[in-house]
Image (cartoon, rainbow, N blue to C red; front, side, top):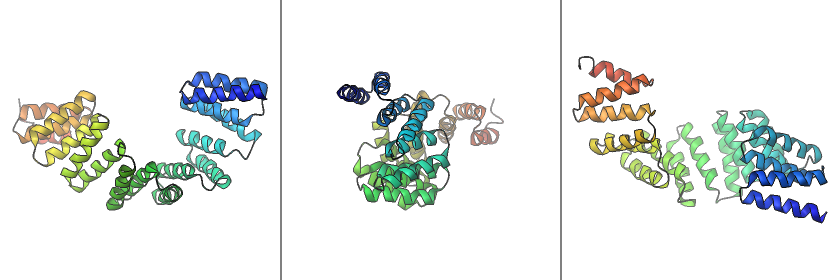
Length: 287
């Protein structure tokens, strides 16, 4: 038994160090010594899951549950695999079983809410996110997910409040800044949007953040500054048709028709309908 415990601890240590293949080897050694060790199956499944090997992870969680049908973590982890595979109803069944075994498992309420959101059941997902928050008032991710659900239901003020709470709890929550900024853009609050995209870009530079900040600046009439952001967006993703289309609008606004039409032509070729419409309306006579 002592040998098994030592090997198991080595597996956990490897997991913590993100040495996933090594962890799998240790948990496999445990199972060779004790094939009824459901915790070893569960943890080896976790290692496979982190490696993106979902089939292997699912097999281990199944075995863990066969050995011990009271293994809460195995149900929870198996639910996450089913969600990743798009098997949402099965995922909800497993999250629900985990919650029957542990009604105070905040992350199970949260992830079940995410699955319901994936199914378009946003009103039901809100109930789960609120339960997760009741159990853990410092759960920043639950507030973020709650914001997403409100966003999809067009409850803008509640969405902003939820994103704001997530940011209060985690000042480095890049996605919360980005989504709140996007919502501010939708509401026409472009200065607020720029502040959020500034923070989003500070935390993680990506094409969409530059594109959306550029749109905010474009909407405020800061055309040259907007073009700079669209340039950065395109540098990061040359397939971002929206950035080309928006840069075309900014160039059109400063009477750079050649540049505008060039951008709209590129965006139209990528399937951007707005760009195609602008190309037809403004560029038909341009040679």
